[in-house]
Image (cartoon, rainbow, N blue to C red):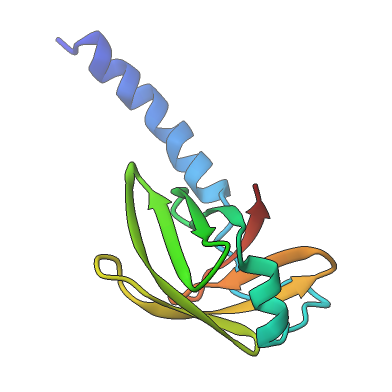
Amino acid sequence: MMHTATRLALALAPLLLAACAATPPPARDFPAGARAPSAAELTTLLRGKSFDATAANGTPYRTQFAAAGNAVTVFFSGRSDSGTWRAEDGRVCYEFPIIPSSCGDYRLVGQDLYIKRANGDVVQLIAR
């Protein structure tokens, strides 16, 4: 005889599969009209600010840039890592002791800021 939990799981499985199939794949390209900011513009946009974003796998994270210097802290999944950053034309490179260091391409669409992460996913950064 089948337990109630097993019957419920079997009944909900098709709904879960349909929901997963309906979820759009992560963006791989910047929105139309995106432009690459200069290194100086990126520094002004980021320094002293915090941004929220959601990775393609649904994990939210926050990036906090120090008001002076090049320190940065990323908060994710109840953990954090602190490192340094540097702006280049259209990209920012990060050095961290724990999470993988990488560079990301940045683009502006109006006032909206987007990053193409090292894995190729494009996510919008929301200022806090």
